[in-house]
Image 1 (cartoon, rainbow, N blue to C red):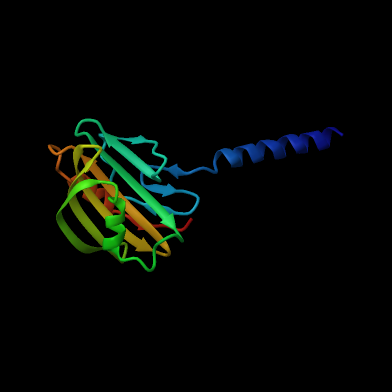
Image 2 (image 1 turned 60 degrees about the vertical axis):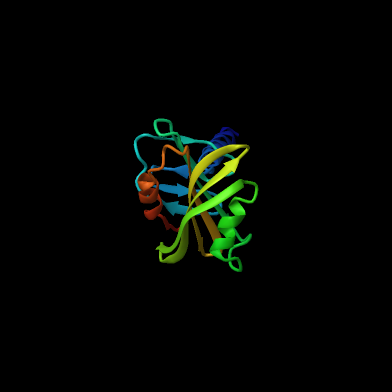
Length: 168
């Protein structure tokens, strides 16, 4: 009888530990979520992690007033939609959009689209740098949202250029 109770106790404890460890995790380099796992480039010391319900991973740099987010969605709209259309879709509810630059490049051995633009949301003008990448049935969106005065995307670019998918 005691042996059965001890087994149940230990089995319950192990199940609780497994459940507690089962959510999304980020170790400073690699993010592991339910559907995706990926590595990112260097995270500047001034970026603090924040929770955003619409992103896998998000940061805020209070000193420069920049917000960074990484979103991934799999099996939804990836294969048949061009990168430019996926980028445009991110800004459907924004007003007065003005693309400053757009270039195709390679990220993790796949074509990606980098776009810099100015746009208004709720009457507030912001500077955006966006990368969109499709890989293995998933679409990855990387966004940097900044005040107009904070237009140095170099830390964000290094963060994104370190991206690669990893096995889950």
